[in-house]
Length: 503
Image 1 (cartoon, rainbow, N blue to C red):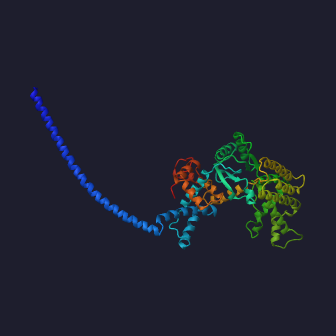
Image 2 (image 1 turned 90 degrees about the vertical axis):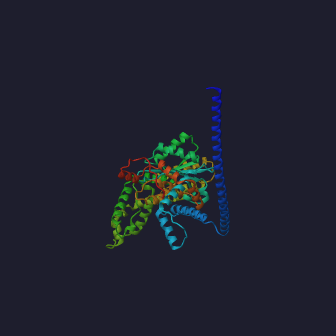
Image 3 (image 1 turned 120 degrees about the horizontal axis):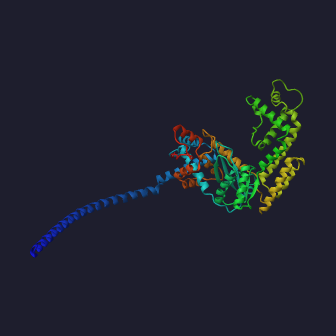
């Protein structure tokens, strides 16, 4: 290609590029013009919209000055209803269904003016969220405190280990026996059975979060005893003293004195036989208090009181009239009067023990109550096993009270409060079709202490429904009821409960 051809080709390429560039510029100018017209149109529309919103905002502000905003009222009402439902469940010990029905009835009667009534499943979830928040909020306590721990009786296939925290000055401040209002639940653990190792593991977890107590109050169960011993050894907590509950101590003392005696065995046989004869009759009011096979001597003082009253009622010389009440009672409890010498001694011992327990449960143990307790049990015979055991217990626990360096502050020696907690919880749990330890275990923290509506409202907000379901799935084993449903549906058995739908 010669030089002229190359110049001609270069000129043609330049002309084509110039034409393409000119067309692109024309298209861009057209596009810019179209976009400009759209922007002008949108700007005018937005100005009109802004003007309209400004007018609407002014009207809303004027309305808010004269009355509260409706949405805010609804939110406040919803929070109040949630807290009220939880308080009714835990303080009035109403069932979840009953709370929903009561609120609905009061609303229909015009007593209250709620816009809505919650479903009972929602009330369950709110209660569990509040209880879970209480456990999450446990922190070390600066004031000296005593830990009260016990295992519940078997409910279903499981038992619960519960630990309560009680301030050392609670007894002195209240001026009487402590109640659930004076306690704080700091730990709950569920297991099929408890032994020393499992108790130690749970105590490590609970006291790591709540701090070390000044003393531990428990019953004389072997599982708790071994678990506390292991915890003290591994945590080097020798300064944490262990106190045996006065109720269990007196029960063991009475058991050592009377359990193997022929007269006591005969006495139990007579009242069992007589109760069976009178239970379905018009004289059923005479039958004695129920005697448990396990822990029989825990409530034996009530049986002694019944024996004293019954002997006075059926006593006296001569025959009773035919078909009279006294005659039927004498026949049912035949042989009871022959045990009068034994019963006199037994009733006297139980009365003294009851007075001794009442003193220490209401006033605690210090130098003053130690002397009063000594005077009470000195009325028992010197050879009495009950007297010897209670004197040894007094000396041992007084030594602990002195070593704590708390002066004359009375030491709490009764774990009746935790038994009361279990009794209250059983009322709630037994409303279920199959009574067993399940997710309702998180109600227990709300049964202790004083909780206001604002406290409950704050606790509910702290734990979300998702966090509740996740914790239940990880912490609560599968209940028998859920396992039965899974079995019927052919679902493989799992270790935890399934995620539940929101109520």
